[in-house]
Image 1 (cartoon, rainbow, N blue to C red):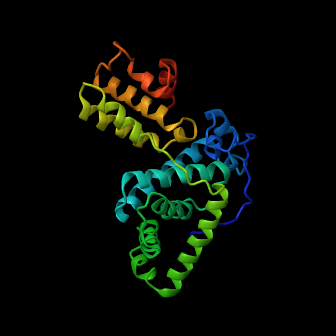
Image 2: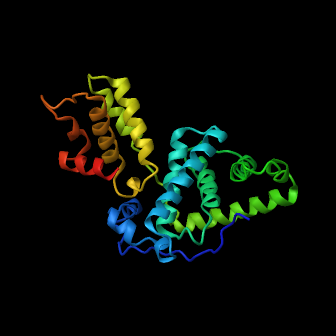
Length: 257
């Protein structure tokens, strides 16, 4: 039975006040803070296991999003919601696939690519039980379907409260594409490789450490290194100034990935 084992009260283990009225400001922490304040750790889940669980719900969401035919941005939003949820809740008390399903349902609404609750329930159940050939028929039974639907609606309330009803997510894709348009070098290749680096970064806690334009800059930096492309560094403006980052931050970012 996949379910939310315990509705743990809304707590934030980080001693960080929200700056001004910008709720989003409270979503950024150092890697050390994220690792040391993990609620999952208090429940006996070590760092290695937590990284595995994080990657596992990302893989689930990527697969789920493709089956629901939603854009990559919607998948990315669902992943960020999931990362933020497990920043404030423990893996030991919440089934990650149920939470991930809820996050996808919410991301669909937020990104204006909504999918019917029925499709979300059916496809999620099929993916979770993909090794069980009887699952497809089972979820079509009214009783099983209603039970899963109820679980998602309970989960939706838990996720909304845990995220403090802050559904505001910005991704690195837009600043990445805007910046690359201004370069005169290997635009397509650079965009593709940098985009892939951003997607790889989604499976880690990077979006809890760095703002989207910093991740975009880091992805371009890594892509240029990978492709051995020289980025514009002379004339009026050095390329990384577009992003309000320093070369030292870029080096640090790429070491963190």
